[in-house]
Length: 268
Image (tube, rainbow, N blue to C red; front, side):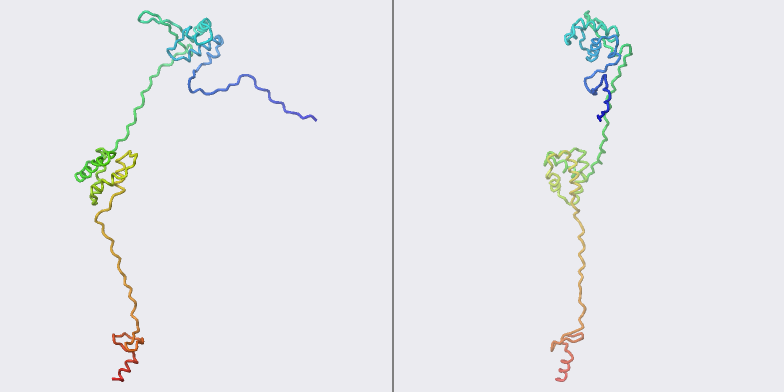
């Protein structure tokens, strides 16, 4: 029995589009031009070429023929087709010096009203950044601290602080001085081992003033622990001062046991 194979579907005929979306260097052309029944293919191609040129480009017959294989006669005939159907209008304009220059106007959609030229909106104004709140005014007790901060640049040029930063950091330095820190010790601590890529000196100093703040000078010492003395209970036995035997009783220094006390009595 011969094997049967299913018949393959008939192959589709006609045009197949393989389209890629253009993002640069492209021209939009209406189907009224691309599918115009009365324009020759040369005229359609010439219209697309003209519409793709920038404003001010030369579109004279000789200039177009110099860039394409068609002759000047064929270019001229195609231009007349485009003029007849309203895609091109050629005129001559007289200059102030009396000379005439050719002008060519291209219409990408003949008969339609041109869109009004829209004014380019002005760029949006930059959003103002919120201003940093002003530091409180410098009080008299913070003036030595402010002088210390202003002098840091003499030890390290990268610690050049602005006036606002000095007024903001001065209370932190005053807290160090109030706790007995010597001004030279404060300067050494603030200028020691700075990072190579120091971008915000005021932020680094604010961190050090807070994180390395010394303790107050007068700190109450912790109360000493109460010493507990453990006494052993009094033993109920004593040792005889004569024979050395233990016996029950609260002994004086010359305590004698019963036997030794009886012997001493008889001897007496």
